[in-house]
Amino acid sequence: MMAFRSLISALGREIEDPEEETFLLFSQDIPSQNLGFVDAKATNLEITVSNRDLTIAQSPGLLSSDREGGTTGAVVWKITPLFAEWVASDDSLLFQHSALDQHSTVLELGCGISGIVAVSIAPRIGKYAATDQDYVFKWLKPNITNNSAIISKHVKKRGKTPATTACGPMGSNIKVIALDWETSSVSELPTLIGMEPGQFFDAVVACDCVYNETLIEPLVRTCAETCQLAKGSSTGKPTVCIIAQQLRSDRVFETWLIAFHKVFRVWRVPDKLLNKGLREGSGFVVHIGMFREGGA
Image (cartoon, rainbow, N blue to C red; front, side, top):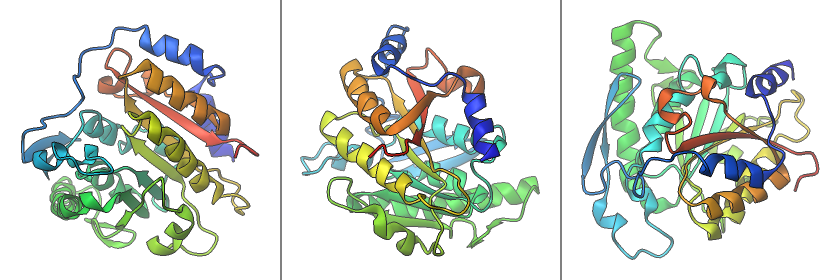
């Protein structure tokens, strides 16, 4: 628990009033990002994350379709590479304060087609579960496979560490699993991922998943249920919940934060601990939550 006290200390002031936090964020100058796509018309994107040139296949046609259940995961959003670079960096407060290490297991909610966060952070941890509705898998699985190979070559060139993870060849510790927040249960995930009895998720990650009021309650519930899996753990370590998002609608944001704050203690990651692209004035924000005892 010492590591988590250190993390909380680094984060600074805890958010006590969701309405005040909403006002503070939306009273700043927010640049126009339109909807926040990188390029909604491109079938292939070249994206650089931490000096690694990734090629991402996406589906503009699917995005513009009338698929029931949504299509927002069909293309890459601007915050995703910025968040991936931050969360997986040597300077990330999650690694600096031992919330994550080479043995950790991370669950990503609403990963979309790109796999950018997965391939960025997976080489640094034990297991990674990339989850979304299964319509994204046609693009997600090849993107993870192809870009894990790119990262492997990059690591070899730099000579910092072997091009393997704790689970074998780079990328082999990433599991792609269908998870619908409205209909699925997280209780089966540890078995599907191959976690040992008594293991739990060290972190839950959701990048740009807060945009639709109807999905807020299922998203918060899924985050809470995942964090509850750590209840009774012999380590006493809580699961850390990291929510990154673009600031679009103050109403939607406030609705999310009120619901999230009821079951999580919440901190906004301060600018001094973020990359430039995520700091105040960028139109993006990162919050960290820790499950409240008796919060759900």
